Length: 339
Image (cartoon, rainbow, N blue to C red; front, top):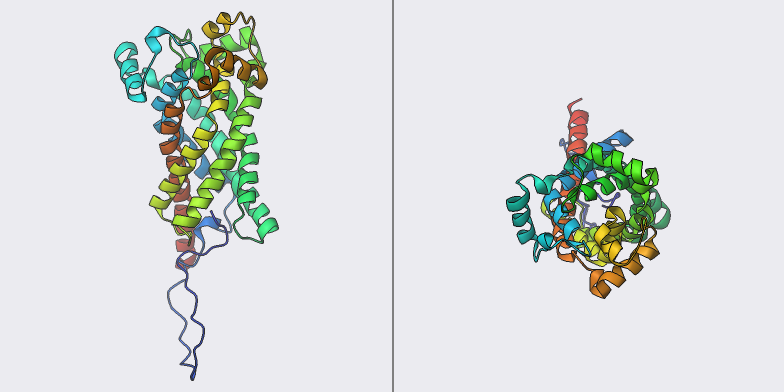
């Protein structure tokens, strides 16, 4: 998302040999197309970024939530025989037929509650940091280093809000989950494991999401340079760039996601098989446990579901976010030209 490129603007051709032609009269058409929609209206507040980000986050997580439920189950290291699936489609079909139509959506309410504020801070922080760093590193030009750093820092804020929601969500998603509601899950976890349980996987989450988001943002910006070099509002380019960025980042960080799921769910059957008592904590312990239970292939459990989830998920997030930026900028410019 280049902040300094103009959309639809044209540059005058250099004068050729011979006498200069007549000076053209100024155009009566307001230079609305010459404004860079990426940089948002100059008077836009931080709330504008946050609103666009919140809507994008809620849309992303709610639309793809059933696939996320499947991913959580497929990452189980010692699943119940009734919850063993060969594909995402088989898993969804089996969940609906044996556990009810709404089962794949269990826990979606806590996810939406966390996704709104988490993505609001995430996109607002990314935009502000990217602009500041790009101005410093490349004098306003597009810098992949700036994109990666901005995405990583934005992840710190996003995960601080989203991690408790992830813990509750994944426990609600597991097969034979003992929790009847989100509130019961929150109370039980807090009472039996303490408040720290909601952040037990935070360091692992950051270890996963910081490289995920760095790869994600760099890939998105790289794709935009290739398919949308003039940085116009082009929905298909945002969808395609977001999809590729999500797929690459998801595949590369699946081992960390498997470890995060184990820390969040504290899978009793898997832990008891290794005579692990109490609660598993720490990324190193999670990595060791995953290897003991599943070997190298254990780190890639659910990779198919994760990639299938992230492709449309990031495509939705970027297309919704870019649309809101375009819409807000266009509205601002229309108001300006009507004065």
